[in-house]
Image (cartoon, rainbow, N blue to C red; front, side, top):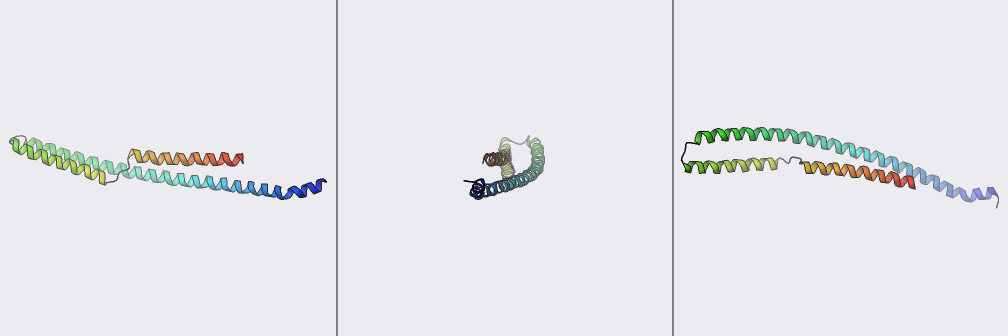
Length: 139
């Protein structure tokens, strides 16, 4: 077989290989861009959630401290009351404490566990991108 005939025989395969390379390069570029975009949005969401949580926690702590201070002042004033009155005061303190706990849980604060979960998801996406890149290089 002549070299001209051989090159004609291999031309469709060479074209297919070249198209596969182009598709691979486009896929890698798209995967990189998508991962970068997702990571950026995730980081922004995490920062916004953290900032909101910190502000909320600060406000809740301030409210709890003010309430505790008020409770301490009331307890000092009521320290002279008979034991029955003290039992009533304890019940009130318990209800107030439960109310603050309920308030804190209803604020839907981002917990460290949720933040770590988001961080793990971003890390997984980065690992997947690396795997896609290694796989496409191997192909």
